[in-house]
Every structure is written in structure tokens, then in C-alpha cells.
Amino acid sequence: MVARKLKFFLIITYFLSFPLILNANPNADQWMESDKSYKDLINEGFEVKSYAMNNIETANGLYILLFVTVLQKNNDIYECQEYQTIDKSIETLNMTLICKELVQPYEKGLGT
Image (cartoon, rainbow, N blue to C red):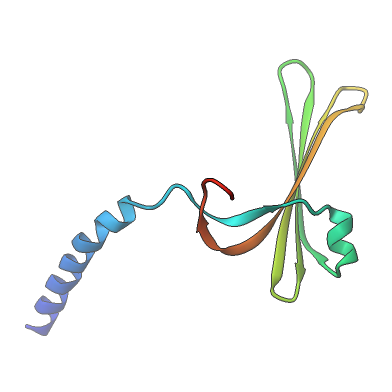
């Protein structure tokens, strides 16, 4: 009897919460863009905690290098993403760096 009531309760709870999962906010984010560089963060006492790299070869022979670095100081965390486009002679054609700070989730939009 108790097991049957528990099963019924779980099924009802599942179906009532299912629409909440389907309506997740696609504009929610927890990484706020920053104008800081690697050098700024290291000078502020942040330490590298994780590093990953990947590369993609394009059809025209260019390579896109992707670097992701996680830096931490106490409870403050930054994730820096670096994108480089190089040719076969390993000359850098383009480079972009963006560091983002981990923050409480917020809704993206004007002014963020």
C-alpha cells in the first residue's frame, strides 16, 4: 500500500515538473565576459588549474587552434578561451582571447 502511494506520488511529481525542464531559459548564463588578459589574472594572484587544447584543420589548409585555460584564486574562477588561426608555415593569421568570470547565473540581454 505504501509502495503504491509512493510510486503514484513519484509519477505525479515527474509529470508536474517535466514542463519546467522543457522551459529552461536559453538566455541564462553563468560566465560573464571580462576585459582581463592572462597577464592581468596572473598579476592578481590567479593560478592555472586546468588547460586544454584542440585543433581543427580546415579544407583550405588552415589550422584553428583552440586553447581553454581555467584560472582560480580562492573562490574566484576565470575561464580563458584563445583561438588562433595559423597557416601551414605556422604563421599566426588571427588570434582572439576572451576571459570570462564565473558568476551567479544571470539572464543575457542588453547591458550584459
